[in-house]
Image 1 (cartoon, one colour):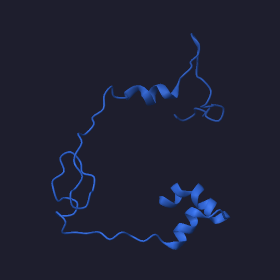
Image 2 (cartoon, helix red, strand yellow):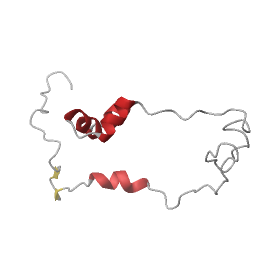
Image 3 (cartoon, helix red, strand yellow):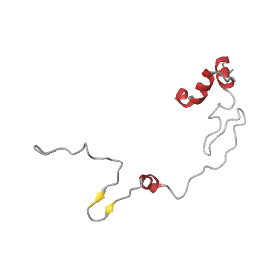
Image 4 (cartoon, helix red, strand yellow):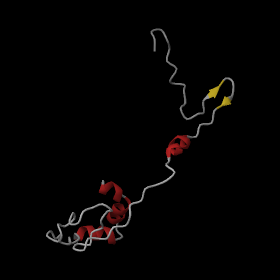
Length: 107
């Protein structure tokens, strides 16, 4: 603002359509902007065989042995923690809160 000009931002409601003096209210759809750049086609990778050693899912151009060095590395199966299993399987208030807020806890 220039010196001496008054600010009129308190009376402006951003959720209301903007009125033009010539055409009346302008109805702006916010989704028009969001969906305006959606591509017409997608790229899908070709199927690749799983690793013969560890059975890991491989991508199209992934080299052999990338996941487990051709069987040299073997990961142990983790045992689920008893408290975590209780939160998943119980019906108490703590368990319900955990399941309802799982995205928060994962974050």
